[in-house]
Each structure stands twice: as structure tokens, then as C-alpha cells.
Image 1 (cartoon, rainbow, N blue to C red):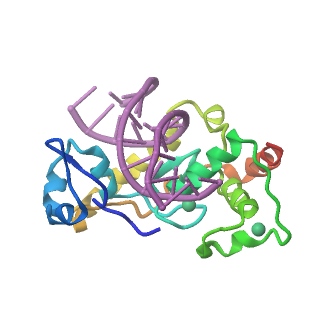
Image 2 (image 1 turned 30 degrees about the vertical axis):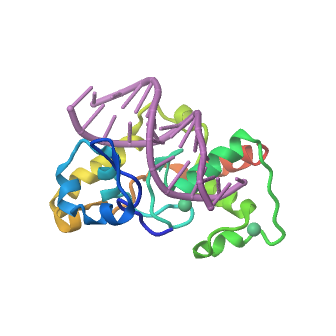
Image 3 (image 1 turned 45 degrees about the vertical axis):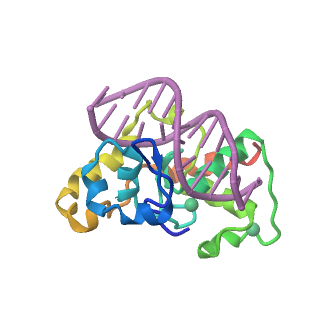
Length: 173
DNA sequence: CTAGCCTTGACT
DNA sequence: AGTCAAGGCTAG
Ligand SMILES: [Zn+2]
Ligand SMILES: [Zn+2]
């Protein structure tokens, strides 16, 4: 969905702001207030979700992805969900919201999501460092719109060979 | 159920 | 200190 900046309640001096009040607070305020990490995070640009093309919120399960896809993948694993689809092609229409859970799951897997991501790479692997490194590379573009833009894909690993394996193994969860 | 926001805990 | 992603919570 659309990017939501400062939409929610912001705790300032123990006071909850409504939307209009929040709007009034200047962009610059949040830019300089580094204590509010969550708001700084909303200023960052993590690129697009590799699953549904929404705005990514970070690297989740090894894939730059949005909150929705992250939670969907997590829920699917936890609840051992099984989905089905006749066409099995719904993932092609990524812009349409991925209403089909089967194809949504497939899209997650094909994007490279894996619950075993921490077993494939050492903890705090380059996967998690990639956004930071790229951020460093594009530091000179920082000033535009207060955004730290990451233009490149954050992850470039040899997933192509192993992805089919994980695809199969995860199908049965 | 979904997904936005928050907290936790590890790492730097 | 700052940063990050996983997990928790919960309104809709
Ligand atoms: Zn997504
Ligand atoms: Zn489908």
C-alpha cells in the first residue's frame, strides 16, 4: 500500500498526536530527531518488495520485502499453511495484490525467501549487511527528499541454483 | 485472517 | 550509540 509517513501516533513528551497535528510537525523535525528510529526508518527507502512490488521495509528472510509479505511468509510457516490454486499463475499479476495465497507463497519462495536463511549463511550474514553497504554507496544522494535511496538490488547471491531446492522443500510445510 | 505498529534482542 | 530483522500485539 501507499507509503505512510508520520501517519501514526507519535509519542512526544508523552502526548499522542492526531493526524493533523502530526502533519504540522515539519519534515525537518524528524530529519534531525535521531532518537525516533521508527520515523527515521520511514524516511528510508528500501526499494521494492521482491514479492509484490510494494515498498519494502527491509530484508526479511533473506529477501528485500514488505511487511505484508514478511508476515504472510512467517504465518504460513508457523501455521503450516497449505494453499492451492487452479491456474498457479496468479503471481504473474503482481500489481493486483496477490490475492491468491498459493501464488503469493510461490512468489515468496521464488523471490528467495527461506526460513533456513540463517542456516545457509552465518548469522548477520552479508545479506543483512547489504542494505547498509548500498546505503553507503549512495550516500551522496542522501539529501534529496530526506531519503536514503537504495537504487540497486540489495541482494545478489547464488540463489539461482539452490532456489529450486528450497522451493521443493518448502512446498511441504 | 491481514498488515501496520511496537518491542525485543543481537550485532556493530 | 545506532542499526537491523524477528517476534508480539491487535484493530479492522
Ligand atoms: Zn510484498
Ligand atoms: Zn493463484
